[in-house]
Image 1: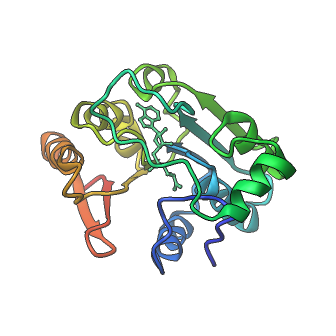
Image 2: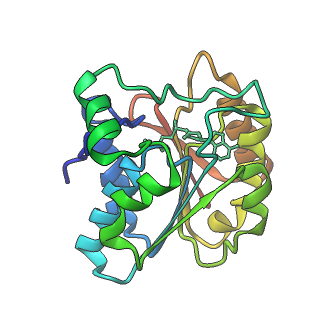
Length: 209
Ligand SMILES: C[S@@+](CC[C@H](N)C(=O)[O-])C[C@H]1O[C@@H](n2cnc3c(N)ncnc32)[C@H](O)[C@@H]1O
């Protein structure tokens, strides 16, 4: 399945990466998907389109993001939310009249799937503890890249893997965010989980051994 960009920004922009990612999801065909770090909602929309094509209405997508440009944790790396393409700025400022990095805009992008989608605004360090993980069978972890945040996110999602599901982490081996790799390596070895590094070191896939 082709990964579409929907005139917005996404971290899966590199050629072939979006398709690789969708193929990983298609192999598992999850019923309840959690994305930590929704950003403009491009991956969310692609995941919903994919799951709708395979499961019809029988799926849920839960997405969590700060949806805020300023952070209490200054160690975090927030992706640049501004477009360099002036046509995209005109489109969002004058036609859509939306900030594409907002809960409202992402809900709008996903409105075709409104009965399947729940978006939550807030910090994963606080909110993930409150999410019932028992039905979630696939997590895409792409939120905060600080070591403590990734460690916390993984700890909160541990039951997903214990129950037979998958955690796919983005940006495994980034030179400017070494905490991601450190947290993933520690988490996998502490809990005796299989961690496969795939797509040219881009993703870490964590599953039960
Ligand atoms: C790399 S972007 C996500 C890209 C998106 N998954 C995609 O495929 O296009 C990371 C996102 O994580 C969010 N984020 C960073 N720290 C977070 C935290 N502690 N809790 C929730 N979201 C966080 C940022 O606001 C940002 O939108």
